[in-house]
Image 1 (tube, one colour):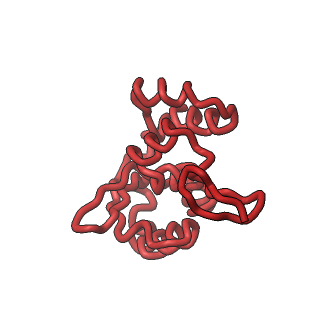
Image 2 (cartoon, rainbow, N blue to C red):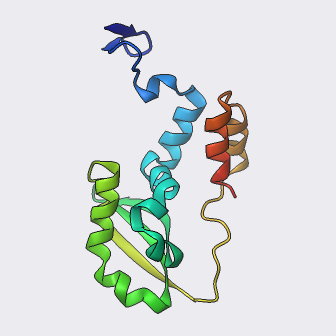
Amino acid sequence: MVLDKSSNKAFAQGLRPLQSLLSENVKKILKKDGFVYFEIIKNWKNIVGEKMFKDVSPVKIKKINNENILSINVNKNVMIEIEYSRDQIIEKINGYLGFNAIHKIQINSIDTSFKIKKRFTLSDNILKKINEIKNKNLKEIFLKLNK
């Protein structure tokens, strides 16, 4: 066993908590913009599958009465199908994340001709902090959010 100096916790040789490897800037980004939301966006296609991925996109998470509500945009042509799949989507998300991160889903209808070009827009302040990240791979992951 080895002691992690940042948290004074012991961990198995070679294994460290992910949090101990992240810079303070990255921790601030994840805390502010939401680790759960980041994971959902990053893994959306794996979570909901190819078919649903084309017609459904996560927009934001809001917290009301200690419940996380995921707001999603849905192609109006599949609105009814998604409405009936609401509980399954929640189960898939929570199963993928390994804990009950999402409690409810709010569905927003979008026109079929509407194309989502960006799933997420980062502020200039956040982009500046991301550019300070020294780990190239981690930096690229965060910058992909802004595309």
